[in-house]
Image 1 (cartoon, one colour):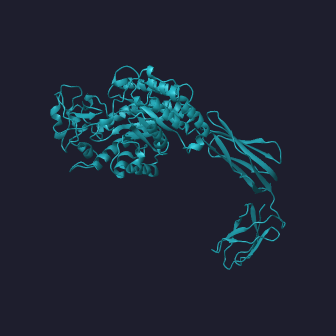
Image 2: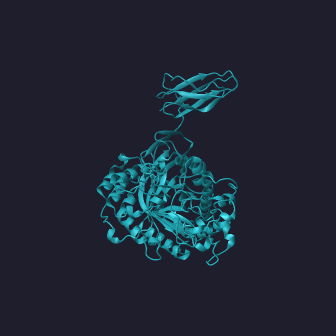
Image 3: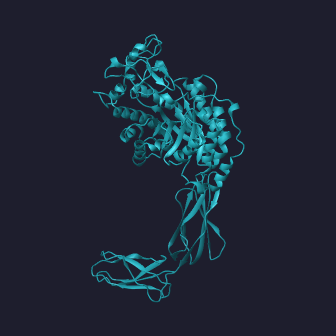
Length: 594
């Protein structure tokens, strides 16, 4: 987060601020009918997420969840069912600020509410931004948790323990004092983080696994980190330790004492010299990789895991910090209407994440445009959300920017209307329409299903010679293939029907195919045989036979042979070799195009 631009992320809204949802806007209704004409469909959903903590304003009581999730369900619920752009929530849980038990209760409640109201949810469990002072207390014997060994678990502004910090500062709209800065890579701090994740991940995993298939889309994912960076959310100023025990604070400025030395030497990244941006990116990369691996090892799907850091000045730094094999990259954006896709270095890192590490896209860990202008937001939703096929989600900080603000709400509804969910569909891939088979050959049927909710039940139907269609077989898993066996001579039709896990159905068009004997006379409609021999003189095309049959004498001066089957290029059907003698290479290629 760019601290100077971020307001309080926790905002408890009253129901008096809710706007009536009524029916879908005329734009959404029109968009459902005309969406295919207004923009290309994108495979998969994309999410705008209202970011908040379940208990408002960092209080010990009160709940944002019922207000915000109720608002999303009321205002955007119907549109969410019809559009590939969806509105949901991004919830941050603070076990280091409150308690593990209270935040587990909040999480359990929120997951159940999200399922009940059909509200998509992104889960973030904080392990680094709000910490109890006792966790890292190496400096004050009068306070809980005091242990001088914890000096290894905090950051230093130099290479030896005498530079360990006691406190630091943060700026989220205005500066304020916080506790000491953790060493993200110390064994003790990582053990603390794993303990937190181990408490929360099973709750999320069980909930996700128990979701019916048609509701799996409600889990947007698990976000690791919280704009993880060095010298950002934890900033230390020159002589900063002298402020401990006083009420005074230094002025916020860019004249700070760089941190990261302890993490760098803990991980073997650097042990001498001056800490650099490259070093900081590597520190954050190892920190976020560690968190993402815990989530992956717990059983969450890789495409449901993302990290949240900041962007750097080079693609290599972005890659070092944000790209790993355990989850998708993500970063903060407060840089204007161009979005993260306008940052060349970040885009390059995302492409590396996709091509080399199995990433499926990236997320906006947080962002805001700080305006209520309809056109600005409409353009953003259309071009920067949907218009970026790599963008999986965007977490909107200061969600009250949108909550009940009619211009922003309508901009999102109108953008959603442009991109309706494509309907369930199915096609018969083989036998292809008008395909011919020689009697006695085994025939396989295949079908491809698109959209809808997996798993699918695919039923094949065939007939013969104007007869009634009958069920030929059913497949319930990929690939949707059915062995039709060896069919008798005749003309057949084939089509398939599909039912998805949500109960939707679709039927393919009908293909026809024939089963016949190989012709032995010189009658037919003509065509050209292209055959290949192994002498390197191929391919060769024969001239059409005057009677409509393709007949061609060929000779070979080497010891190669004709490779069969050859291909009839005019309406591919069949071809045969009447005679062929190896060595002398004499033979006739015949074929028929019907």
